[in-house]
Image (tube, rainbow, N blue to C red; front, side):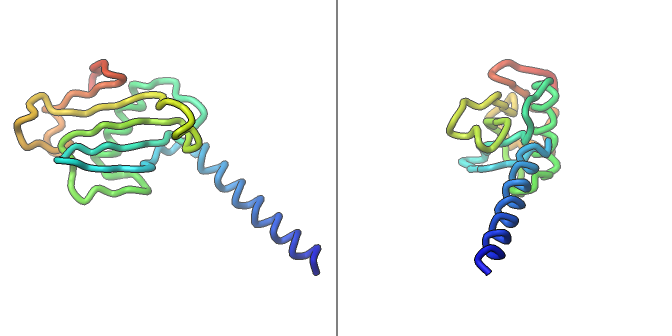
Length: 134
């Protein structure tokens, strides 16, 4: 009886560890946390992979996912006016390492009422404080 309980416990634990490992390496980015102040959305995103070869493509992909409201864990109730994103490769890196990149998506005119979805042609994309093409 005790052996059966131990075997079941090991099986459940092993399945959870396998699923967590699989999720951390799925390659599908997701939001881990978000906060909004005055239309500025601050996000912590995990890439769920070991490495990112093309950081600029990754930055654009994250912005597109925000515009499509395509993240699994967080859905915007309204679209923010700016995005400030700290990106990590895996969830376990948060609090242990610096973000592997910082992404900022901001309008050229801060005084106007813009949102990231409807007014993207008025925005600039920055990767680690360097402007890149959107």
